[in-house]
Length: 223
Image (tube, rainbow, N blue to C red; front, top):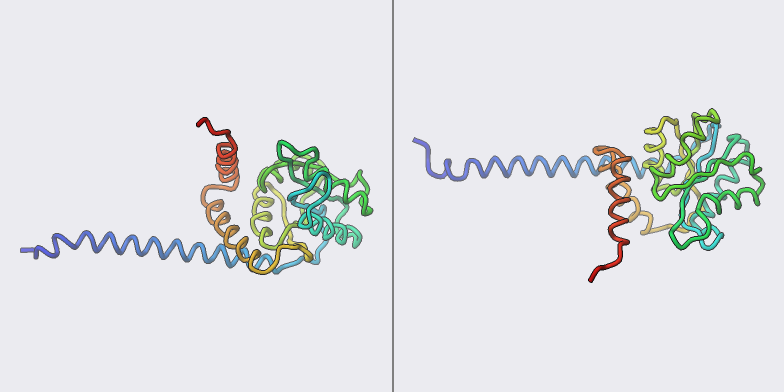
């Protein structure tokens, strides 16, 4: 006859083991994603490609924020060194903005020696949308390999999304970003989480979810 303790606690022990295994797997999976984000942030390609892609971030009434300026300056250096024949800029705008991040980026690059005819201008409010906004124009221009310019902590996810949409990306993180110290580590933890989720459900789906959440958050209160 089975002992009462076996009957009562046997299933509970099994559940505890399953939960423990699951949590261990989650931690290991997240750690792998974090390691990939960290290691990619420290890479910088020396190869030439068919385009430079600059991911947008905030601007202030037509002026690039320090973070955006750092990315654009990195692109200017790459352009001056003949690393690619085209530059792609991305990023949309908030409802109250006059200019989009991509428009501001294009103007800045033109002021720093990149001909307007060599700049492809996109839009997008997140990384997936950034790439989606220029995918057709890039493919029409014969772009296949790209140098991905963004902050180091953002490189892995940005390149994963570029890969998802048919391009071969190589990293070239901005070297003068004002985001430093503990702020970089905070961003890496966030990025690792987004990579972990995006890899499972798809970056496009993650974009749709976060865009929907942002829309709900921005709705006025009904009291």
